[in-house]
Amino acid sequence: MARNKRSIPEINAGSMADIAFLLLIFFLVTTTMDVDKGLMVKLPAWSEEPPPDNNEIREKNIFVVLVNSNNQLLVEEEYMELPDLRAATKLFIDNNGDGSCEDCRGARDPKSSENPLKAIISLQNDRGTNYDMFVKVRNELLGAYTELRNELAERKFGRAYDLLNEEAQATISEVYPQFISEAEPVSVGG
Amino acid sequence: MAQIRKKKSKETPPVSTASLPDIVFMLLFFFMVTTTMREVTLLVRVKKPKATEIQKLDRKDLTTYIYLGAPRNTELYGSEPRIQLDDQLGSVGDVQSFVILKREEINEAERPKFTVSIKADIDVKMGLISDLKQELRKAQALKISYSTNPAGSPEELFKTY
Image (cartoon, rainbow over all chains, first blue to last red; front, side):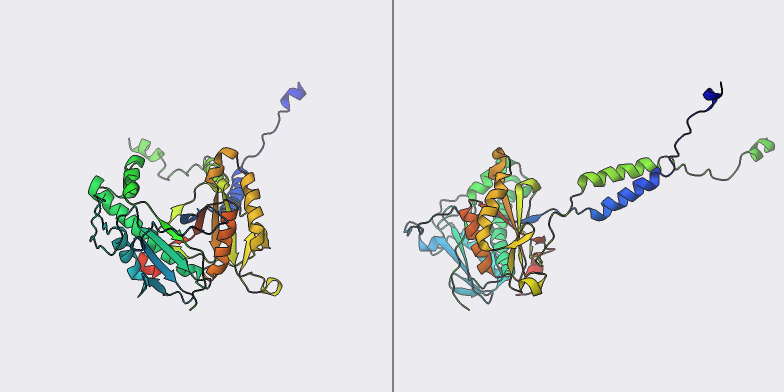
């Protein structure tokens, strides 16, 4: 009889909240929710042999962007400031010299690129170029493609490129595929 | 009637705190799930450049990070920019085997999605980065990402140059 009366005392759960708070604060402090973001780039596969002298690519289809070790830009043998690069790149890609690109609205300058499928952007830098400058130039070149794609998406589908479904995105990137080549660095000097 | 009204106390009842632990636990679980501990201690100083045309790298398990920058401990390692692979400073020659080892760890079906994220300081010269790129090409790690911070507006990028 006496034993039955002795009941197990209840565990005091009052401090449960404190313990949970402690853990919560620990995880709050140690947590880092940084999502890594960056410019996605695809490198060409390695080959021991030097690239063949490709005469098929015509001079006018290559848009040469040179960055020297003083972080200055030389675009198509002309000095250029960074803010003008995006517009110049867009003009080059969208030029549509041979008229085969129906969706382009370029100036059809015979001295510039034939069509976006043939237009190649060649980015060359010196070994002394700052990484910061390189990323900015790279960013402008990518930006030119993004703007062209967005403009075409607006015309065709009435929406920005990012908001389209995959199929629609594919039709647009077929018109403006990205051809940006990062050449091996040379010492072009200052 | 007046008497009945008087019996009701006008004080507001205390808010029940019984559900407080539940709320806290919910928050706790949220942070426990989303948390990622910093895996490496940075031996080099990295101030990432800014850009606007950025893409998110969503699969962390398929990404390998390579850090480039001037060493923090200049007395020990000098002030020339170096490459950090995992927890130690390496040279360009170590990159190839490092990347291949990292790729081996990934499930075979997902290896084509293997990405190398280059976290380089803004003051690093392109010579070092180009050497790194050549090594990555030799290691067949062709998907790379230049890690950047988002810039508010394109104009922000033109300030320094």
